[in-house]
Length: 108
Image (cartoon, rainbow, N blue to C red; front, side, top):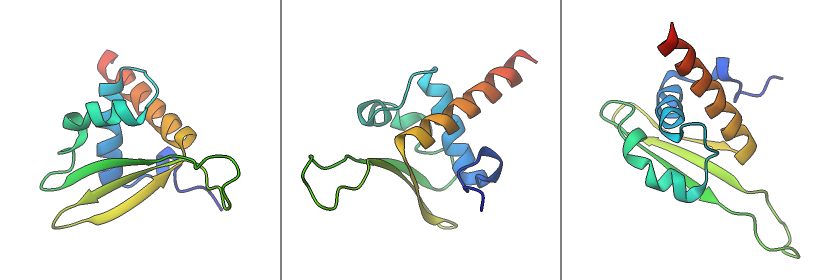
């Protein structure tokens, strides 16, 4: 089964948030502090909804179980109330894909 986080399978609403964030990052890797700092660029990417990223870090070594770090995108509003989870690598890969698409579209 394909991973739904493939760029082609991302819903239009998630795509809107990720594309807005990708442009604002200017090629930088996402970090929790940077996502918070850039929140104004993506919070209203879906009309009449609010988008928010949350980061859950990996617990210290020796903790059982020790889940991996992850980012959660929440989009809440009258039409959508959803959450999508990404590993840091998955999020960085999607953002880079959207950044490249935006660069190609702006130069065309």
